[in-house]
Image (cartoon, rainbow over all chains, first blue to last red; front, side):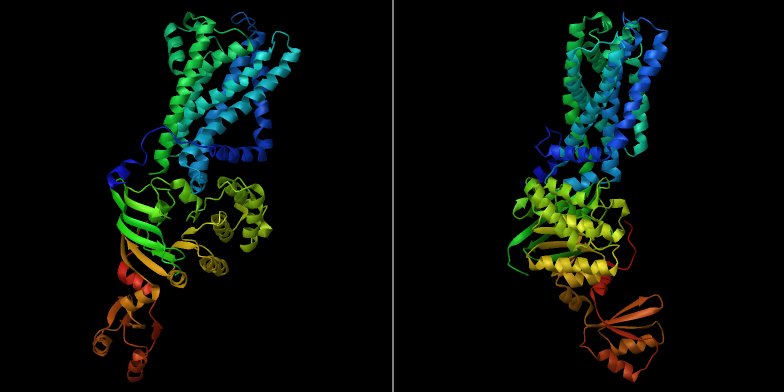
Length: 282
Length: 308
């Protein structure tokens, strides 16, 4: 190999080369999670219960009809979508940054036969797993509520929430990892948290119908906000009623959101791995 | 030194960080079973060389082969046969001492039973057995270094990269590490060592490369380097201008160096010349000692302080 070729080889953008070793990185995080499950699991159980109580029953007492549904039925699928977003986004920003920057865990792993690309891919899959775990917790709470609250009916379709949580989580993880690749320090994550996550929390058809906003706002939410897509599909799965955003019919909306999630996930999965590789090897 | 099989080979190896050239077009070879020390002031490029050896950093240009494999294309195989003890503590604080070793074994595809066996052996050797279930935060600095050392050996590497392995260790722990290095040398493990401790380099290394500003400025066996650059003996006296002409006359070939209020005279004359001189000219506060690697190092790289 000439030195000219070598000069170009590091940090060149390309398809990441991955192997089964990705799961070893995932497994490391899984082991930490199971060790700290009492800290990780039980407190996160409280949050959806509070949301359902405060918004569903408390506020829902005054709002009896949203798109033909009781308020609790309207927000239940949105709470699932939010748990997916938060679970994966925080895992692949703050938690990944701590492992990379403070604990030097990535440095230790790449001294073994595992590559940088595989470390990052393992982190992304773990972020998706965290989203799935969080969604499962919320789903359990919603399931428990549905036993006593008649208007909330879960069909066997609810199992589809698991793959949605995983792939939606992978999407948020991949986007989050791009911020991690760019973060000079941990405070940097205030930007995506307040400027990206918080607006989505409110504006993606979560606590009030998106279809009641001006068309331009609906267009923006559909075009650039990932949470909108997850909420759309989640509504289809949990309540069978999808908001008529931009006047589109449910099958078309769901198809658009699915394609959106797949496309954006593939794109950012690749970009984030390349950006992280660039950061970690130069 | 073992056989003459070349295990590590660098040709025109260069690493730039932006505009800064950290390693500047260096060539070197390391033979199987050898222990080679990279000595150099802070920022000389030692750690960068080591990091390129285990594919942590890609070279900017030039060639680096480990066991005949290029670092640019065969990272996975290279990393499988190399053990790394990095300078900084990158133990996994989320796990206990034992679990650190077990998880590291998993990264190397070592089966669980074998992993447990190896981990137990290492913990015993490095006297960490009692701490097996302790959290990393609960370990002292010396224990952490020992665990990093143990972790570097867990894949039974052919090549061991030790980046300042004994920095911050107490003398007991340092001797334990030295014992292990000499033990591994007997097993034909090839060792690359960077260090600031000249006694350590002189004691452990078959060969030394002195590196400064990214270039190798000298190489050879420790004893040869001492003989070549600073001779046999050093006379240290209080600095005194009146004394200078007398000393210069007595040792016309000697190297004179002033260190604050002290003065050193190096000579390559055989042992005993200084004693003879002192018999004729008795003085206070005199030391005669054997020249060592530290004298060589300071002579070649200067006494100015280096920033990181």
